[in-house]
Image 1: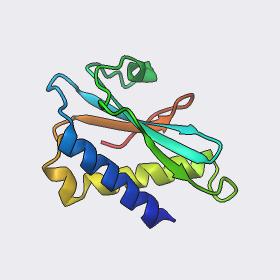
Image 2 (image 1 turned 30 degrees about the vertical axis):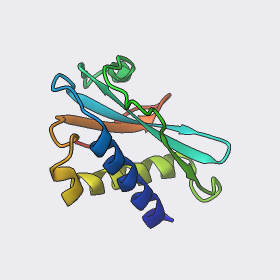
Image 3 (image 1 turned 90 degrees about the vertical axis):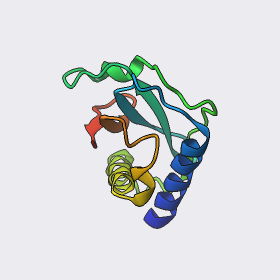
Length: 126
């Protein structure tokens, strides 16, 4: 299951990389997570502002992909509760950051990356 999610995540970011531009004023990206009936969803936003002590910076959206469709993940919620899924998402994001795809992507210039559920604390990944 993890490898399928990782492959879908990489493909999603590769498509965004081909189609999108991120302004140089964007200092932070957040991979937002939320629960759906069929599993979980990951979406992406960027902000010109970042505040390490206040996660509300992620509500000051300066960048959204033009095709603002997140990555829907059908997953057994009995196997992955929200915390397990959040930990999995963080590991997959870290894996992307360490990949060759990332090195030449529009995302590589961003100083800060976080991930987390909308109502929870954000985890700094980069």
